[in-house]
Structure formats: C-alpha cells, structure tokens
Image (cartoon, rainbow, N blue to C red; front, side, top):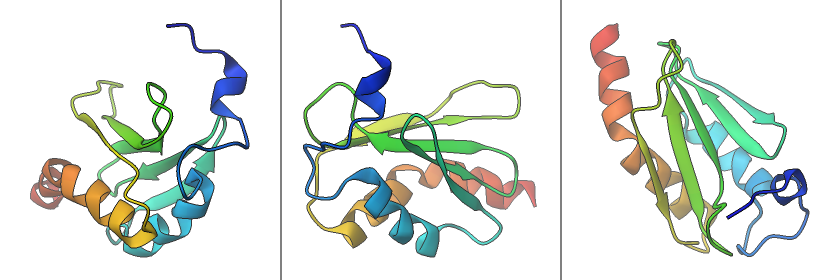
Length: 111
C-alpha cells in the first residue's frame, strides 16, 4: 500500500466526525499536564507530562476508524492500536484513553 501525502491532509473523512473535531474532547479529557496540539499532516499530538507522545488520527489502513501510536523520548514506538468509528465524540476519547492506559500507568509511576 502506498500512502500519498494528500492522504493525510484530506478534508473528506469516512468517520462521522473528522479527527480535528474530536480534538476538543481529547483536550478536555487528557491527563493533567499533557499538551494536546494539531500536527501536520493531520493528527493530534498528545505529549504526556513524562515526554511520551501519543499520535492519534484517522486510520490510514481503512476507510473509517481511528488509530494511534506512541513514541518515547528516544523515538521508540512501543504501543499502538486502532478502533472503528464509534460515532460519538465522547466514546472516541474514552476508547483512546482506555487503549492508552498502559502509557498513563507508566506516566503515573514516573512521578
């Protein structure tokens, strides 16, 4: 499968809510001390207080759904997952935090 740059920055979404609309709920529900921002080419960057980044966006392998992966300070990606379009913004944010819970536990241990 070839991924073209415009595939990331397309205004058309197969999901009920495009990723940039979901960002508000992600920001509201992110762990205290996290920085949430929009990144080109079309994903939400969530940097936890321990420096681990979660990159969350629309699935690149399917016509709908969302996927995410993490990067630690050395650039290693240890965690990733995906889920179908849940068609509810709050449910999308809840599922992201549920799937990313191992990272949140690691962040709590680092404090």
